[in-house]
Image 1: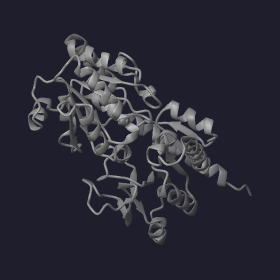
Image 2 (image 1 turned 120 degrees about the horizontal axis):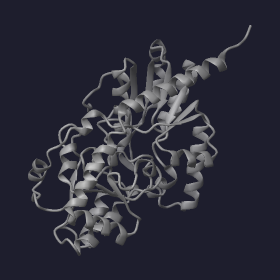
Image 3 (image 1 turned 180 degrees about the vertical axis):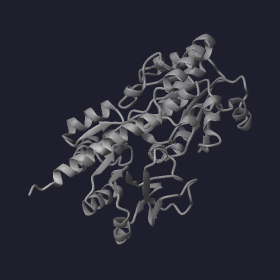
Image 4 (image 1 turned 90 degrees about the horizontal axis):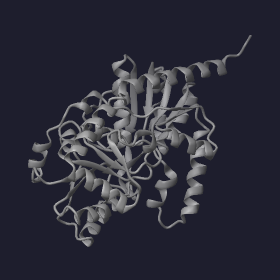
Length: 392
């Protein structure tokens, strides 16, 4: 097949959507399919720019990490895109890319499918705080319903997210296909070397959060957990790996809670050279986001044999199975911190959960998810052909 991905984000912009796109592109291409990508120009290259059409873009005042593509620029290149004879358009984000993908699908006469990566109902009020939550919730539901029902198909990373979309009134043909783990996720990193590089004692108990440092990730709750854990384990350290709009506020909150010596922000990490090392440097991975449609970092941590303590909300309900590499906790400081303390103090329990984590993560291979995606693509193609067939 010849597939056109369209996205408002991609590397060098680091987030879960970029990772998902990269993973599926790699796996589909490995299977002999052609995958092109339309994405914003960040005016700096990613590691692999092959088969990517970079679109001129401008920055967004409320979110300087992201960029808005010039829709009209792509439309001017329609003859070039038509000549490629794509079989399907796969949209990855709901902004300019959604409308561009729909336009291309209809103009080129091919199916348009979209992955619903973001739970907007819980996401929007962190970025538009001047409007009531009820108004934003209504807008998010209407927005998702309108966009979803315009598509030929939807890819949803988890069952709970699909259930939410059905309640919104989204009736599009949908398939649950999470992003799987690529083989390199299981290449064990060098935790001691990472600790040495960042000045962390080899004996120090380390909690890790890795991901976008954004408001919807609920990292403020993890700071409260650290405060509670510190009362029992005074030298505990929370590493926060990543960047995002919440970092400055979290740094202020860290200082206000008296945790400056117990929290370390280390920024973005290179996925190819540092990511696995970072996971392996941790004694426990902690997570409390309320908005995940999947939570790929949880599986990445498990693939490195790092036990997890996490809440189970939305998509993480599908990923997490209590006792299989994770202790599921309530979003309640006492319960969450007690589980963290038990893991940090009990070597046997931590070792058993670590072993279970590695075994569990192997069930989530990127290859099997790519095969499922191809089956969905082919079903949509067949439906499109049947719908366009005119007897006689």
